[in-house]
Length: 229
Image 1 (tube, helix red, strand yellow):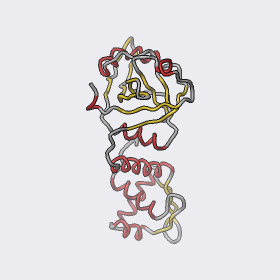
Image 2 (cartoon, rainbow, N blue to C red):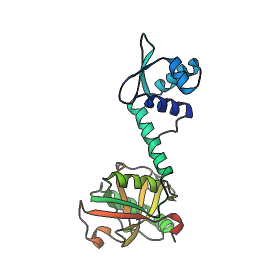
Image 3 (cartoon, one colour):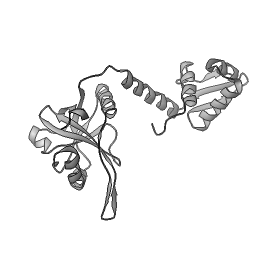
Image 4 (cartoon, one colour):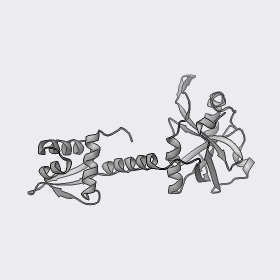
């Protein structure tokens, strides 16, 4: 989420979603809504107004009260809360496994890996090959695995300035690639990739070593931080 919602806003969206306001307009009065939330009519009215002002819901006044429906932004917040809860409530697993398919990158990987090479060496214990293997995550199970990974402690390569340019932080997660090569998923603070693309570095040319081509399946097994040496 861009910013954590206040408990009042979050519970307002939750209560409206339970009344069906995700997929249709929900008709009710502020008095009724106050009873649902266990608050006064005035407080209920204020919470609805605050959510509307934040772009989380649309409200129209009617003769009977109001018609309310969550916006795309409001629904997105609820989905993100649901994903966080799924991760938090899931039983612990020894292994986080991410499956994806090899895809082309943007042609910038080699440059940035070279720029960060010494820092990657210091943080990860290896000097990376000048380039990244780009993996597209296409299955829901692997998307959830990526979220699980991001809930584990990362290694952070701090940003720096060089020749008048500023390079941001890079988040790193150690992985085993096809159970053969140890490397790392690297997530730049500033990236042009969409969220389903993972960039992987290793001390060798991963494509050549494993004979990979575009659309080949690749499995990444996350190495927990406490197992890193």
